[in-house]
Image 1 (cartoon, one colour):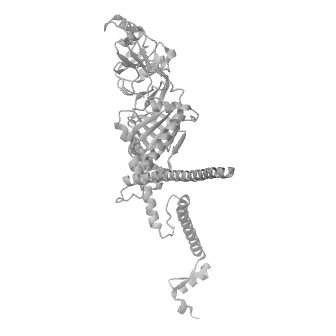
Image 2 (cartoon, one colour):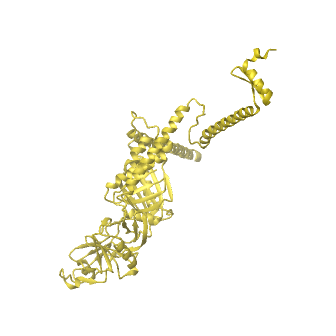
Image 3 (spheres, chains in turn blue, green):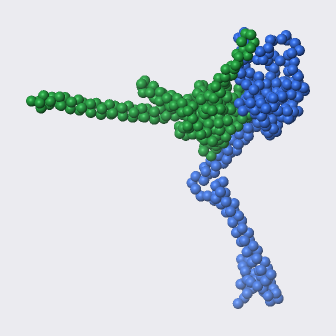
Length: 264
Length: 266
């Protein structure tokens, strides 16, 4: 048989190689029969397997990526075959977007609300329980007992009335004093059954009764100390807020003029 | 002869007995019908409330945003609650915010939380489940205004101290301070007929509580009776019941102004 006629010139060349280099296999290449060397054949064989393995890994990875969210019910699958797949994806995406938008809106609203809380020191007084809490921003610095208004209605012979009640609301520290002197108002004399002296009479000035410090809240109301420490925690005052010595010192040092006091 | 004389009387008594028997049955049937009518009316009143309120706030021409579905309802209720709390910033007095999701009740002053209490028990009328989305948006996105308040204790009690003309102190006449003994319960009538019933925990055996509960029941039944007599669908008031520790209940009641505003999150 004429091999030249059958396979062309390349056969001649390859046959020459065959005789010299011990070919490993014969393959058709571009319509011609080619005899490959063992090393080339091995290379092609390995590369085919490698390609197959890479493909397999890719497919597995894609499946894992798409199945895991399905299992966790967190996201759509690219391989899910369902007539409503597109709309389901749309719906989930939309829900997710809405949820994100709502979260953002909630955060905005929260921050607006949080902005109302003073960043510096402020005092909160509970007149029902006769307790106070000192805050710095949202963190509680100290809490303890205090004394607030006794809810007494004092009436004198001239039908004058005084209500000894701590006012509720938001107040600002209007002034600070150390070693405050109490200028006794009329009701203090009425209560004690004493005649009311003139406005600047020496008997109106009392030293030491208000403790070491006082914070002015306006309209004559103050936060001050007391010599009657045993009454702390009870509603016994004429409207002012009495605090223990150590608590008062801390409150006095932390609160500045303009600091907020919430009384409820 | 005796039997002849006696017989008419016996028949008369028998007739009376029969008549009484028939009239008893008639009265019983009438009462049963009346009771049935009352039950039906009170049932109708709740459904009518839902229908009316849903109709008042639902706008059929606008479609709901599909995102506002069950997935984000928790977030949405929080959003509404925060909006209502922010709307209360304009209030000068103390406001109340009730978060039933987190079981918290807070006293606020210009957005600053001054008192927080944990709610130990919550009871909510089923009717709230049937409110549609738009109604909930309209109801809970804004603060409620309180009208009448019923309570077992007074808001303030004063010790009356009278001093005579000759400046001698007379013994103080104290109004009995019963707030520490009595059970603390109070009912806030909100707009849209919603009622918030706040009670201290474990007050079931307290006399003050019994009186308070009786008053609430009396009010409820009188509304049903009014409806029966008119005749009209009786006014329905969904109730949100909350139980707190005694100190918290007292603090909250005493701190609140007469007609407080409040934000509510279901």
